[in-house]
Length: 164
Image (spheres, rainbow, N blue to C red):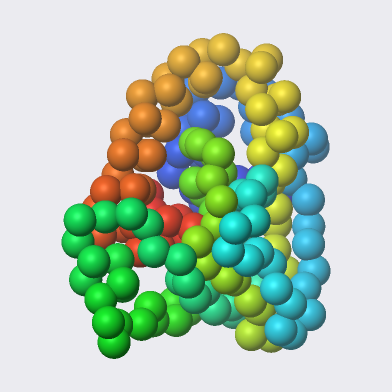
């Protein structure tokens, strides 16, 4: 799982700063999830409790729920505007918002074919991070900035996906 872990900028940074964290995440947090064609990975309203890395296959994300905003056009709530399907390809990260805050999905993620995902369980991640106070401290400001960006910019359309 290390190759998947190290492909994410923030997770890579954690591994550079703190010895041992990569091993702890790989052994205690990461799991492989094989998926069949047309599997539903998450749905609107479901709590985001995992981060996903697509190792193999393709998926489609469809935004269904608008976020509150003064810009109804940006959020797709303008009459006649529909959210476009977003393709998810190999090596894409999905649901990284779960690292930074409690979140309920606003879209639906489905497999287009047989896929292999690496999942990172956020409850287990919290337990691992308890042993790394330096990482928790340096991540706090990033988390605040991430939540602000995720809910108040053009990135809000795809906040269930990775928006580094």
